[in-house]
Length: 163
Ligand code: SME
Image 1 (tube, rainbow, N blue to C red):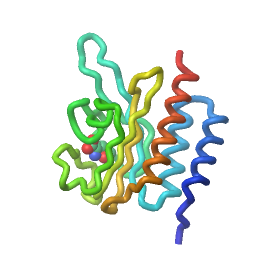
Image 2: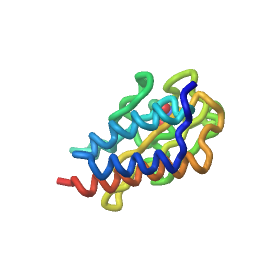
Image 3: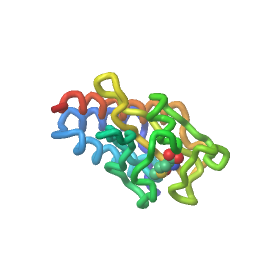
Image 4: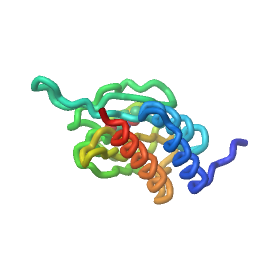
């Protein structure tokens, strides 16, 4: 039986990763693996990064590092999905029952609840950390804090490596 990791333990592991990481991409790949492997109800963990709308095109969220089954949603406009809602408002969105949220874009029929946390760098939303669970209301306050902590470290790493 796999063991559920404690939030504080995971936070220090993520902080250690962030201090050693070579790039934001490297940090994001490690975070998705860590959260997916060690949080038993985190069944899909992935980053979407905001691609600026160049030459008159609307900005769009593009799938980055992820762990879990491949999703059909590799590019999500800001006016669609829970992902679009979190990125466009700059606020964490927690959905306890995705079947009751009309914004929800289905990724797997097994998904029951979802959390999406925006990532800020230089005062702007640059992406988000999205997690799906096969369990209803899987994301409590402690989980929310953990995911927000990870998103914050990625934001700081983006700022540090900004070209
Ligand atoms: N459910 C998300 C789409 C992304 S998948 O969950 C990976 C949404 O409603 O925006």
